[in-house]
Picture 1: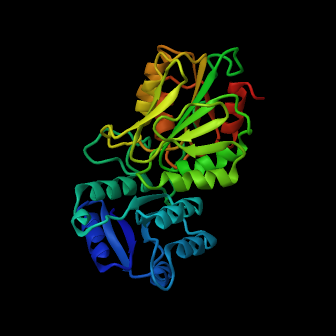
Picture 2: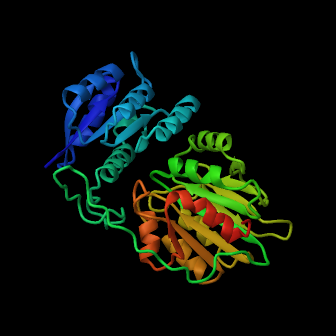
Picture 3: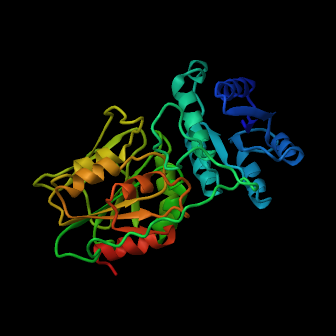
Length: 367
């Protein structure tokens, strides 16, 4: 049965473009089209059996954030994907939307030519596949969702409880230097808003984060995380010298690599090509740490589509003392990245989201 999608956008062009993209996939169907927020709420109230909603942010009468808040109050369950503009204001609104419970976001094309680009189409369809728990077409199943969604009478998929993995060695303190390296994707911004505020101000280590995001959005995420957290978080810049108790979040649209030098360890940000469509890419970050002189590297893998991070951590474990913490399935928005690293036999602890910060602190010897 086709999944019905509600399209909400005040632009006739965007409604047409998105409709064509949805119709190009035989698994999907346009269930309804709304011109603004109020129109969207009327559609939901009249015909609430949509499987997903594509929601513009900036609209007349009622904007996307207000619609999202109202649907949250009404406990509307289908996933909502925001269609966001690449502006400073749009980026901040997008982070707010994710905080309010939006599943993901896609960046609205900046020109007429880009509306017909394959990049926009692939991004939109991949986010819908993840939201609807569909196996990606003509690709290996890296989503971590198993076979295509088998729906029960209440349309809720059965959740398989994760295997609890016994630590291979203690995650406690060591006598040398420690680094924390975290990776996340879909659901990551909201997950980080749980983990980062629970970390102590003094980490006894520098921390690197790769969150899959396009250029222009990560600074807004950093600003929001800093408002909530005791630890200091910054958007990484090329040449940043790594300091203890400082968190560096990879800048969207750039690859972040670790470098060692006599004058101090530092980061480089490059426009190297995306790997697997990802820039930043966690595998590239982890690979740059191979043979580094840290006494211990604490790798953390949170919610996200695909398997980014698994290959890099495997290589890193061959050369360094590595302790791996992964988020468990029930607390993930998408159990893809954590499942991939666990299935590869690389994980030392599998924990619910609200226990991740404590595990990081113990592993660095803070408490």
